[in-house]
Length: 244
Image (cartoon, rainbow, N blue to C red; front, side, top):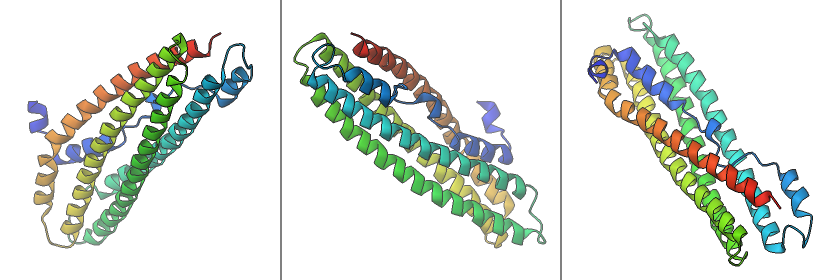
């Protein structure tokens, strides 16, 4: 903890930017079941899969499509983070009166990218809402299996997806907080370039956010681990539900 209290201003923003790049790409909320595989199995009527189960897989396929769309948003977000990291490198040492114009230009460029990040996060939130509705549909489809062993499996799959979606929503809120930390940092640098703030004041404000960033970073790790466990459980349940 003492290390973070003595942390340098530059490393403070480094933490903020790196935490911004945390992604759920490696912790997808749904196991990688191909739609073709589901369709192939569900095309065997009255042998292994009844109509209710086919409907369940159809809804599950819609969930996977939304999940894939969400991963694309995260990918775009992280591409922007790489751009911000590059800009941050370019701002290093730009504190003299002769370099303030360049500092201002770079800071504004970073702010524009972070504004785009906000839009991406809004789209992720909308996607999570859509996934939540689909999960409700999965619960409904599962009940149509009428007390069978497969109903229990289907309900547990839906329960796991619901829990994962809730964790992803918390992840999103934390990412939004980090995004605002990054925005404040570059906004202050812009003020430095305009003579509205000293570089020392800007650095001090960056340092003030380090403890918050550290806590968010730790929570990110906890969330990713929890989602990884749920992913494994859901994958096993899907395999059982697909079996004869």
